[in-house]
Image (cartoon, rainbow, N blue to C red; front, top):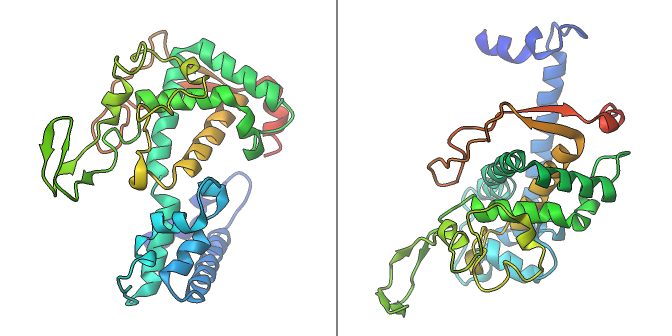
Length: 306
């Protein structure tokens, strides 16, 4: 009874605009969701092996065009290009897990930089105003920004890069392991040694960055900054670089841009937003961000159309 009340009772609906005694709206949502799952299973079953699923899942929209499709498949599905036999036991479940990993694993690492970026902007209102001016210049106030606008929003990209420099989502990146004995910087490293790359420390190294503790998005206005060696590696590097980095950056840029474009933002008090870092695999704020926002008067007519 409790489950039925949770799923199909009136609280799911708006009590001021509709009455849904039999839970029809909720039932339609569940039915549509089931249809999507059935459609996905039919797509998966029409592919004979994991290699086909990988190729079906990879698109230029997410991974760009700088590398070949075959190389992308090798990065995501190394078993597909090796000589090792692939087990087909419970293969539908394996393929479903692969798809879920591609589309869901970056949720936490996309949310974190958005919260840090908004915190930094609230503590630096001139930077926030400059970002909003860029959005008004390239997007205008008659529509919401979309993906086609992203290449023009250079300063917004600088803000995101500077946020990831100061507060990388994965401060220690993904663990590595040496496959052979080697010597690096005079230190002997035996095979099988686990290595954690401290991206947080690299991004704040005063020997690499000028004024590393300051929030200065303008440092990324030069096209060469961050591409020299391994001074800026928020997504890692090499074969174990995050395969969803381009998709994640697009999500963060679209979301942060929409928040700046559509709303006026203020701190809840005169004190600056607390910027202490929490502990964990991903870097979150110790104190979650709280802020005050209101729709921009010039964008209300656009928001009313949503």
